Image (cartoon, rainbow, N blue to C red; front, side):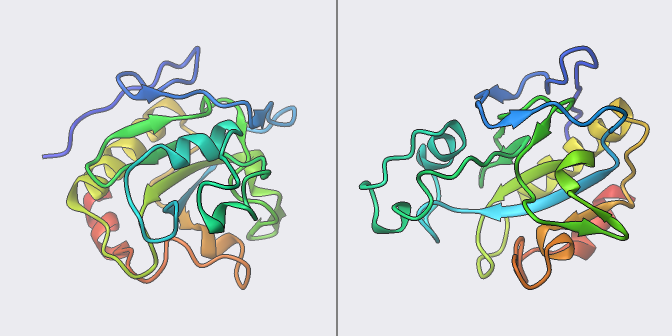
Length: 186
């Protein structure tokens, strides 16, 4: 059974989530509201799970010398609204009412700059390692809560980062089971 989640409509915070509010976000443009949910995949270092590296990246204090792969990403100003860890724990970094910096150069249909009108959800994972049952359950519960809090969102407008930035991004990758998520959302 999928747990129920709730979002505070005034603060844009996911109740009962681990809060790690980061500095890498800003206000959505005037009149912009969440209309799209973008699923990402992340692991730091690549292929390793657990630890504080994702928190540190999103909060702007990832040490460039802690791992050889960090030198090229430590100075990035990136974030997502939430990360769902392998065990299903959800952490929130940016209030849903604000614009997280997760999509980069992107386009959905004829609309560019997807950060302006989307919610970014990172799943701890890789292109080649199956995501976990707690992650699918947590993602489905979060999408359900988002659709309740923001009537402009729909479970039918959930895409991968690869869908809005083709050729530039591959996540959440072939390891992500879209039919499984769609069945949970039905």
